[in-house]
Length: 453
Image (tube, rainbow, N blue to C red; front, side):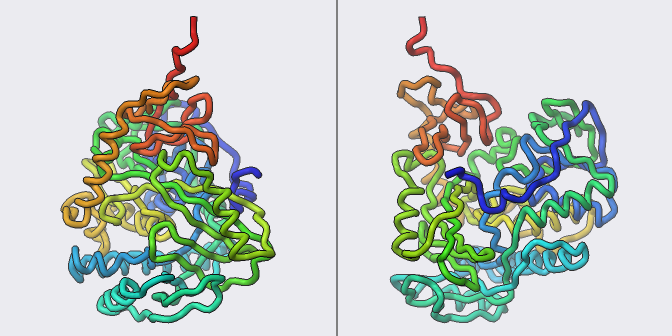
């Protein structure tokens, strides 16, 4: 089966190559949902000369592989944020994501976008104990949002309880972004594909197709292309997860997530149920066939169902669970590390960054800022990932390619699921011949000298 998502049946705008050197008021790196929304927000707030570039096709990365849940319920995060950040900043995070849901509704109504936008409830459930769920309910209530502890009834598994958020939603992400592209191009925004950003020099974006001189440079690529200079490679890591779109699995109204890491995710789309599971750090668990395992789980949950689509997703994770959104330095801005919640985080990033650029105060910006991050939230994850990187800096295996990532020299491992070389440290991916599929690596793997001569 082709590992394309259910969303990728939607035809996106044709590719347009950058013709050479250019200039703009703002250049956005990344033509996924976040980058396109940044361009849209900037245009709405008065900027007119905007360029968007992408190393691949429009919305061919994370936006194409999301489960497209539009929710402020990001797992069991609010009890942790309340404890570590205090009530004011934890509430900022909650309200920023609630505001993102409202902005989707407003944009879809204003622009008359047909994208299967469907209001629903969102649930995080437990199958074994409810203490963490109950703590989350108390935390969110303390932040001023009405939520419920309840027992979902439409899942094919027994739960011990769940936290329910109302007025959340799901949609078709590529139908939405296709219309945003049409609006942008009609207003004169230039969107260039197969144009790879390689560096920045004194207000000039360097690409493999020429230079773009711009007053404002915004990095909305999946993994920041400027990671070495910013040290973001030490602050974010990447995870993979797996999804099946099931036919004949019955009706489903709401969206669901297991509160335990690696548990099931559920959401409806049309007559399908999207079943997700098995998140793991990219380049790890390389000897496991996750799709086969998930198909087996699906057969047990929905005996009459068949998989119509199957695909995997790769997400940038931060050590404290909060995205990096804000000014990196001078006229350079960044949005990354959405922790699997890119629909609301991408909208929040577009709102915050566009306000920063037009020098308007944004009430949600502080909690996402690249400065003043709380070490207590980051320490455990940072130490674990640092030890993992140190243990994977060298590779002693023999292959047709040298299994050493061209980003920072970490080992790459072969994925049985998708027949790719995946970096064990920062999540770069390469095809069987060693060509780059996704960064942060920019160069292909070196060919092995074994067997030559």
